[in-house]
Image (cartoon, rainbow, N blue to C red; front, top):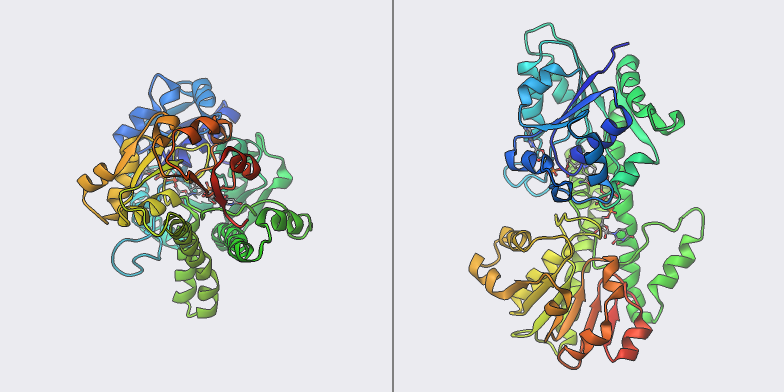
Length: 460
Ligand code: NAD
Ligand code: UDX
């Protein structure tokens, strides 16, 4: 069996960085080099201060501190690292296409294909190529075809090894995964990768499947998870009309062991770089096989999520006497979930955009997201000019400052620290009546009403 002494991972992002840090920590005899075309990102990974890495994940800084410079490296020397390594992970982004055929639906595979071509060009010895990125079912075929047509006699084995970590808990998820999934054609290549995980993952949690099952399982897992959120969010709207309480309903159904208690938290809507992208991709694939009922079924999960975000913003406007023009709304949270600095597809961006269209001014506090990022998220939507966004949105590094003189507070992210704020003090400094729109059902309703707030949340 081939012995792996050097691993290359292409893509130093939210998946590549943490995953390789854990592989390096658990396999001290393997040298792991994470490469990227983005020099700034690589520089940030090499930052002497591990508290300034490009990605914030609880526990990540400590592992990087232990392994970096020993058997974990970050570099822009892509070609050299590829050729020196026996195993190459492709962990680049696969965003929704913004152009051409499948625009707004299909996954854009150009970065993955560039990686395959890069590997084909520079490899002089046999390689195992691992798809770590989330890819449409049957992508491995395209990669194989590129790698098999180089004209050299270098042999490539392709494995699918999708990543199931969630942001904010990436390290925990990597160290103690529910399962590791490896899809492949040849047993020997599968076992080489399985051995690397076996350094810390029990064998019975390392699943071996064919490549296509592995690729499709990743899209399916995300579709099922997102589906639970849209399902409970749909019930939350019904709760608001019927005096049922969605937290109570979620608890009651979650105790049914067939349903289970996780991922039943009603919210302003799911965000993140994966759920929407992967469902749209699944829908696109189904349509491409003329499976329109399958496509429509899953598409509803994202359509309902759009509705939930819109509904939250509309509720703010309606409650504030049908106008927020010239009013100040304080946002707590901008990240798509707690314990991450990632804002991709965050509900906060869309809620802000709706409210800005209604001429509100917004003041924001988030513990980990920099002001520049918030502005660029809004500018990316192209709804208004850069200077209008700068004028209408002010970012604060202190939550009490952000909420001063606001007409309403909107909670967009479930950061723990929001719960322990001095809400009496916040109340005193707000315009009256003082409204809270709790998009995460985070605060204690009774307590907020006692303080004097007009409090509303999701599904209660
Ligand atoms: P990311 O955008 O954070 O990182 C991708 C990196 O790849 C970027 O730094 C980019 O510069 C680099 N890159 C792109 N093309 C390159 C090339 N040709 N050569 C070298 N570097 C290149 O993305 P991410 O969140 O880490 O996601 C990566 C993949 O993992 C996606 O397919 C995603 O769907 C999947 N995934 C993500 C998560 C998550 O929670 N973010 C979880 C599971 C799976
Ligand atoms: C998700 C998958 O969970 C993970 O397995 C996959 O590898 C990548 O995509 P991630 O997007 O990082 O992970 O975070 P996740 O915890 O799934 O949350 C996604 C969104 O759903 C967040 O906006 C979160 O706030 C929201 N959510 C989650 C809810 O609104 N309610 C819930 O009950 C759970």
